[in-house]
Amino acid sequence: MNTGMLWFDNDPKTDLVIKVCRAANYYQNKYGRKPDLCFVHPSMLNQKRQKAEGIEIRSSRQILPNHFWLGISNRMEPS
Image 1: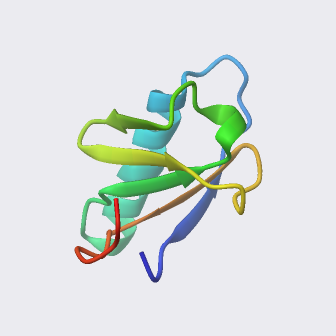
Image 2: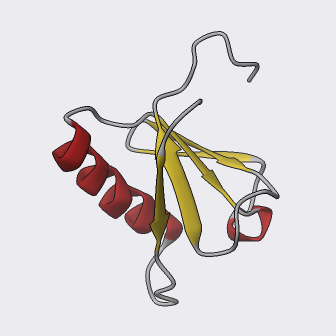
């Protein structure tokens, strides 16, 4: 993913999947396309990868806790 949208959500009562879906809905309304990739801090994931309504959630140490980096994946990007 070359470009994306940074989203912040620190609500401790809300599940990660719900947070990603909220951010994805905003992204889709703003940019007209549904994101398919979201990066989060490793402390936010119980496993290496997860999915939320067709959006792949990956961990990255470059993302701060409670932040979400959403966008459209590059098809040539290693998985």
